[in-house]
Length: 192
Image (cartoon, rainbow, N blue to C red):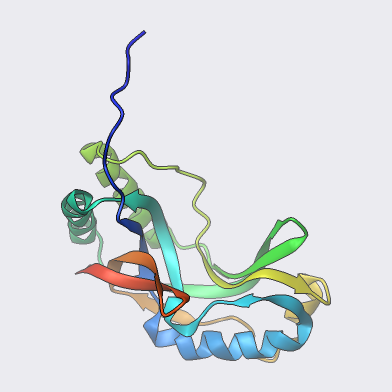
């Protein structure tokens, strides 16, 4: 049996690749405010942390940044800007609590971006990634306990989640604590 060498790397950053949502953040906050009366308990995502994840990477060290930047650059050069549309509320349930999110209308160009990104990772063969099925969504709240079922809640909203967004770049974010709060900080971006 072949022995695997144990790495002595010290991890310094927790990162993921995503799409920024700067142009629609105010609308997302308005939706959160409209949801508040229907929530018994939970944590809404902070304004600065709204994003759409393309690939969670996890813990890396400084020397991993260069290959990640290459992968992002290669991907961005292969895809043109496009538009996505938010079209529904959704949820994941974990231990009787929900993660509430906004779903993205089926979009072949978004899936093309995801596929090109995955291919770039495979060609580099540098990172071992978990590759769950791609379900594009924007998380707006975590550990939520709702007063009514989500389907009923969505029917009660004045501002239905039907927002369009231009996707013009992809970003490498670092997840870190700043002033006692989790923040997603852009550390590299590449225009499509």
